[in-house]
Amino acid sequence: MMHEFVTYADGTLVVSSDIRKKENGEEYIIVSFERPMEYGFDTVVFELPSYNIVEKEGNFSDDEIAVFKTVVERGAGYFFDIARGGKIESS
Image (cartoon, rainbow, N blue to C red; front, side, top):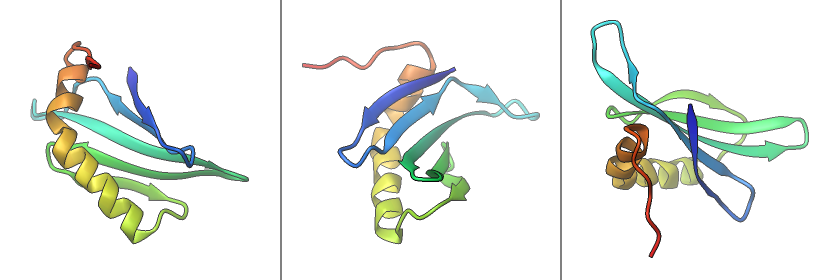
């Protein structure tokens, strides 16, 4: 299952997955940034906790990707809480 986190002003949607397991039993989640374009999507997908980019398509700039990496690094705890069935509480 995917969980919507935020939609930025330019239409970029940020979603994160439930906990997934690799063959070796290691837990991970993915966080995806997708922006609709005229003929498809710009997409960058990170795997946490490694923060590696596992998919990249389209025209996100290096600066945009650097911001996205900061988002996943700073928000990793929130993404894992959501993946484990928690909720993000707004104040």
